Amino acid sequence: MLRVWNLAWDMYRGVSFKTNRNAAEFSQYRTTVGNIAEENAVLVDILESAGAVPFVKTNIPQTLMWPETFNHVFGRTCNPYNRSLTSGGSSGGEGALVGLRGSPIGVGSDIGGSVRIPSAFCGTYGLRPCYGRTPYAGCVNSMEGQDSVPSVLGPLSNDLAGIKHFMKAVIDAKPWSKDPLVVRKRWSEEEYNLIDHGYGKNLCFAILWDDGDMVPHPPILRGLGTAKKALEAAGHRVIDWKPLKHVEIYETLMSVWGAGSAEDYETVAKLTGEPIISTMAPEELSAPTEAALFRNTNSASAYQLWQVQKKKRDLRQEYLRHWEETATITGTGRPVDAIISPIAPHTATPHGLNRNGNYTMVWNLLDYAALVVPVSKVDQAIDIKRPRHEFYNETDKIHWEAYNPETFKDAPISVQLVGRTLEEEAVIAMSEILDRALKSTKATL
Image 1 (cartoon, rainbow, N blue to C red):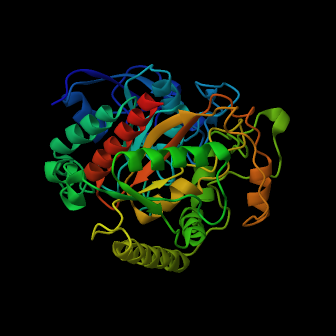
Image 2 (cartoon, rainbow, N blue to C red; image 1 turned 45 degrees about the vertical axis):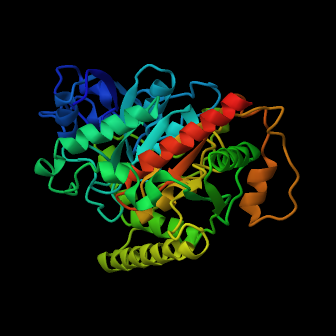
């Protein structure tokens, strides 16, 4: 049982609670203004019973399907380290508040990176649990009824202890007795003690340096390299991870969302005539033809959607086999224990320019648990622009050549540690190992 801890929620994201205050303060759509929750979401009841004190809600983007944060009700949320940069999205207000130390812990939702992107951009820890590990009953979100790649609720915190306490408190409350979609899986101390991973001794991690589609900017590559050196210094082995069909995974996920996302957004927005936001860029930078990153206007028939879901199933099967086959190269007799991956191909970007969610989306479709661990900040003296002569595609080339260290001044650098399905306890424990290794490395510099 937790002692009292202040807690923030993403604004009207669905962890709504009983209140007499006008719900206009908690809206991403104008049409939700004035809609006051009649009862708590299941997660709210559980957290309050554990001693949590909800005290504020935070900003989100219209539709929730953006990796930045702007809406017609409250406007834009900026990065706490550099106001010219985005806080990320969709849990951007949450990331900014926790990053500012305005709250020790908060809750966001993640369908394509919405917990991890703000966590990384704002320098906090953040966990994307797997489907059904935390309760979602009573929540408000976009694309309700889309259950092929569902949104999940996860914590953002200033330290890993907050992530662990949150997950243990929620799971110990037996949420499956309150939400029928929660997996009946108790918190496992054996899994937290890494019983399936050599009890945490001589682990083998794999680094995903790039996804075969876009190479990350120099600060992100430095962050991955720092993680590698720290883990090796702590006695663990680190190998390279070969991405398997990542572009195909991204396209499949976009097809799942695209089956009905445009109709979903427009149905809600037309209730008040609110225009659908087509760009997160400030007005002077807006491009009329720019489309929402997670918006697809091509609807699909039920049969067409079934084929996409079949493709998703097959990709998950292939990736499982791909991971299992690494047992032949780890030297531990086990497959790779966890993957260390970028969260994005860059740190927090200027407003309106964060248009790549691929490094987080891949783990949503595969349903792998992933936890963001801060590493450093952009150092203009170290993270200089570097020449590169071969590129995966034109977008990769434009992305690399546009890098300027001055633009990303003071932006946090983070990585995500990725485990397998329903491995939240192990992912938290291995993230603690990574975090300790990073801090130990810094102490010796």
